[in-house]
Length: 341
Image (cartoon, rainbow, N blue to C red):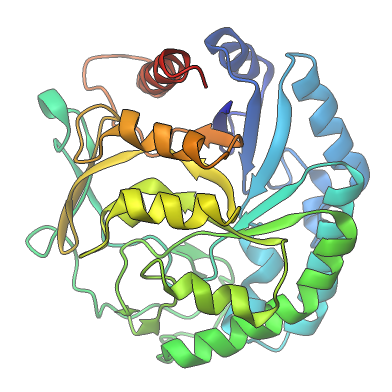
């Protein structure tokens, strides 16, 4: 098993890579990089030279880039929204995937969703009043809140879009769109040796903000896998999201996907409660027995990357992002050593 860390915008720098190395991290997943890290982003794709330069910098700290998570939004919003520019964006996405293969970055995580992760409200929801998100009707905005034109995954991607709101989209229409995407990208991914890893919907509900959603239960992935049968279609296994799904046993879900060799990497995080009322908490205080979970991954031979995600923020620590990450990584490292993983 590989001890990993997600690196977001603004954190891919020498100080943070040194911090990760000191924690014992060996692999990182780079989250939605833009022009500040990969200048070629301005051209609609990630160039091989930029990817190699990023890898070289990480290697200075004995850290390997195990994958990327989420395309830059302006690189593929037309694909997900079925806009007039989707054919052009598709060619750029193919170029990105091909370059990832040449750079030997083997995973591309993605979330094929319009509304994205939405409705969670930060508050003193974790141990001792630490700040973390909660999703519940009494704190969350209405689930039918419309999405303004030009907005994608909760970010304004096209500020010049006309005023108004996106038209509702059914779940079946989303399945048609992801089919269009996978039929074109998987042959490229297979040739490049890159796995496309799909994140489940958070919150896991059929419709959010008028937009149909697909991956809201483990069995929904069976349909995804059947679109283009391929070893290169996998799960971005967000353990917290699966744990918050009503009626879903997270341990059975780990076994389902790990035994089928369908997990690309793991967001190893914990939650308390299930939809419609759940909160993200410290890795060691949620409903999921994390030791039991890690043993199940090991039982079925998954030896990929485990990374913390959505760590609560300390309220009395000036370097809270660093402290929260160190707490989660230390806990994960301890379990791995305890079970000889």
